[in-house]
Length: 327
Image (cartoon, rainbow, N blue to C red; front, side, top):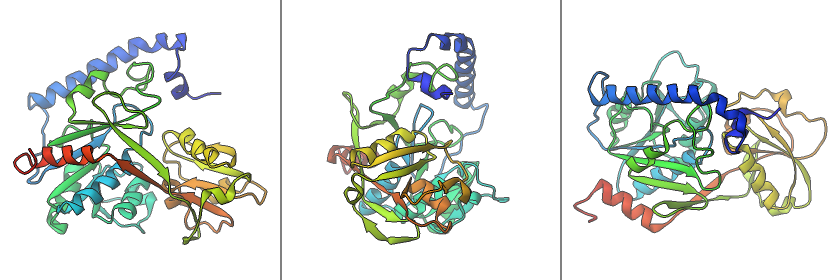
């Protein structure tokens, strides 16, 4: 049976039955925003600039690799950025939690561990993001905060909003949850400072290109092979991300014959789930690898991705942060 998400990107007539619930959802998020604007709900202002990166759709758009790219870019521009996230599904008993590349993803969340490894910047997580941000400012002397997936977290005031959309799937059928994939109405994109499209970009959007950077041995990250060296081989492909089809497509484009194994986003793997009863290579995403790196798997590989942004994007971001220096 196909998941509901599949039908959000089709013209399935049965979704009209969910539109009354979508209307109620839209009213609820509108009232919530009004409550923050009217100061009925508290908003936290930090003493440093806050850049929020998120999306208005459910599912993966590539925001986590973009956050890592932003951290490196801003560090090279002279900032001391820190990254905050919710720590989704993290089981830690106390918050906030500092995150390192070797942290336990079950405690702090898989994406936070991945970001710590990719960015080389301080990372902290907490369900209440302002707590994580203040911890980074106090203990790591960060002078800029990057918030991963915080577009709808209005308790944290922000200076710059960046929305990431899928350049192919776009906004699906245009309905809000549960009749469609939208967390907020499409007009919300007109309010953000920068719109980044993963893939094809429309007018006014900045394109983001994602490239696979070779396959790394799960048991030995220093062992790297070009994906092309697996060309023509039949492999198992495992993905527990928001849009697993994108990962499978990357492997197929490299010439691999893929048997797909899609799991729910943020799935907590157990070793037996990756035992397919044969000796074919097993490929997974870098996000999944942080949860599986301690499994004694033979012939298992993960595929990190790098992203490319246009120079105009970086120039515009710095202009928003420092209008006097970058008019």
